[in-house]
Image 1 (cartoon, rainbow over the protein chains, first blue to last red):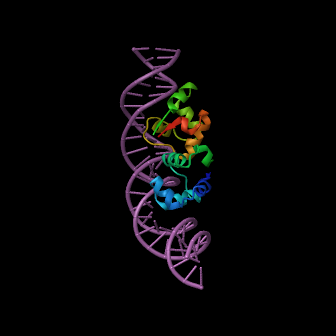
Image 2 (image 1 turned 90 degrees about the vertical axis):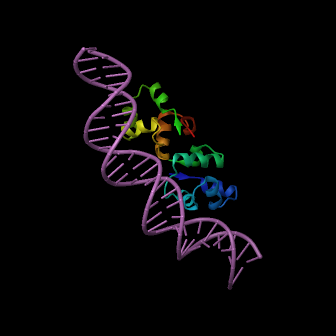
Image 3 (image 1 turned 60 degrees about the horizontal axis):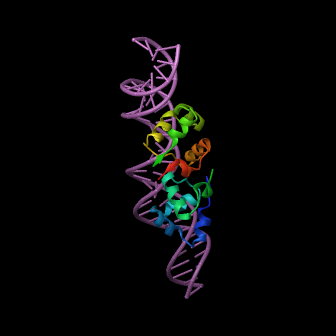
Length: 62
Length: 62
DNA sequence: ACAAAATGTAAAGCAAGCTTGACATAAATA
DNA sequence: TATTTATGTCAAGCTTGCTTTACATTTTGT
């Protein structure tokens, strides 16, 4: 599953570490999701969508 | 995380087994999600949303 | 060029998602 | 009422999501 996290994060000038802290997960988790190593859980996807102010379907693509 | 799967499924007169087959997961998985035992993975949430013709955010609530 | 910050990656371990098989209870129907 | 269909639940096992620690590489800034 692809996603637009890296681009949306960059728009905000957030580092992976910044985003990780806001999401309350580890930096490695953010990196792994961005680089497509795995998909976030549904609750984490909701948190990401809220922070990046986009519907889940706009951030993630199946 | 709560969800509206049971109601949306009922609208369509689908059994848990019907939905499970359409989603390509086990009946127990559908049951567990409906009864709140656990949340679906993000890919499964996408499948559910497509089948039930609603955005993820309308089906699931954090 | 150099140092610092950011990103990528790996291993080991625990938690959550999902499987199959089996059985109990509830709801629908003949 | 009796039988079938639907739902709930449990256990054991496998896979995936996420953690911490650690280190290598790339990018940024002086």
